[in-house]
Image (cartoon, rainbow, N blue to C red; front, top):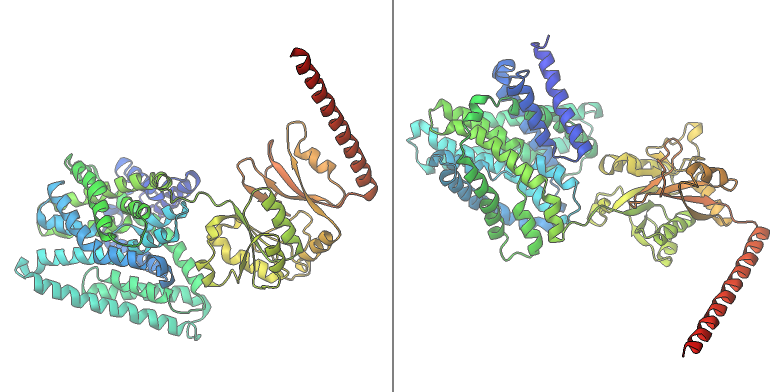
Length: 629
């Protein structure tokens, strides 16, 4: 049964997704774990041998997967992101690509000892900086928007450029028996590139024209888009090998910057599909490593890797960004970060196979060298990114603030209380009138709709550890949670209960605040009646059970403040784990007037007694000093 192709395909999926899940749980680079898993399943255990199991399907599977991955990357390239990073990205493309190509070829020739032909081809591939690795890496850091946008755009834009440079060199080596000149090969590549780019732009405009006008039903939009991407890639690839990467990237960029009603749904579909493809393809590629290929790794390659890390990338970036307005700390960080990923390995593997067929010397060394580059750059950059950012002072740390959607008396009172505990609190609302009271209380406010794309330009959601949707519009609260859940994580989103949930009305899309499921209207009424917030520390002697048993009638826990500063809200169906040392924030009724008056009398007596004791002690100390003199 283990020899069945169906079983092998299932194993590839299980291994790839399993490695990604372990990476999420441990915080380790996913691509490194997928590489290790593929090597174990391939050359170590021999369970998956792509050449044997997939045969001639291996190359088209990898190429189509890379096409979809680059298209999804293009979908994330909105021109608004260039408001801060536009000049830096232009410099890294116009100056950095040719400089990085030449330096990479120089390092491959003199460091790894490869022939000039193979070195120039490999140098072109090395300008690719792995968007599939940079994306997950940036999600774990809180960097200035300019740095993240620069790295993201550079990675995705340079992917097809690196492939085209490799196509140019490959064409020069193999074109008509290598008798063609550079001008002829260059013109051939340029014409094919322009044609591929025109196809991508045309398809992008066609999709964004057809979809909003109802020519494709909603349930077919994702499948149709996937087929259009694959078809566009194949047509361009028939014109010239690897130019299909230009087609799919430009198609994604066009779609990202034109209005289309289903943009978010399509993007999420592509993101899910990309995760599956990255997992599968990288396991397949790493499983192709056999002992013969690994033995082709030479000790001299270590010199090349050192040059790549400490000379090629830093010089390329620092020269490209020379005299730019970007702060030098940010330049140094970008100069260090350049992990390579699946696209570099896939393209290298394709060209290595073709060059070997032509009998080009050193072509067999490209595969182990490309894997070595991926492993070293991922380990070096992936595990050191946070440390380097902290040392340079550009890592803003984990977001600790609280974002509250909806300005009213209850949210304002809650925000003021949280601010008194040391948290940054921002209240968002589209009404300037509603935000007047939070402003008077010196709370940060944001006027606007969180669902507007322009909000991303003014509000960094990475600053907030929790979001509480508590506006007077229950449907809007649910929509906020549904829309921002995939980005922030549903575990960080809470909404107030809807008034008509039990009647089949608005259904919550996030956790419902409070075990009692009180609505905003109820909370507003209670705050008007004098209810207030209180904080209780949980100790070994006073447990959470004791706390709940001693709560005033009607009072309940709202949130728990952990010792590390993390806030978790109490939900109707999910209660946070409360342990010793945590502090529980509760919403309690006002103290009865009689008890309040008695408590004030006791406090006054205690204060008077304390003052008398202090005066007596001071007089005794004075007499003692006088006697000693």
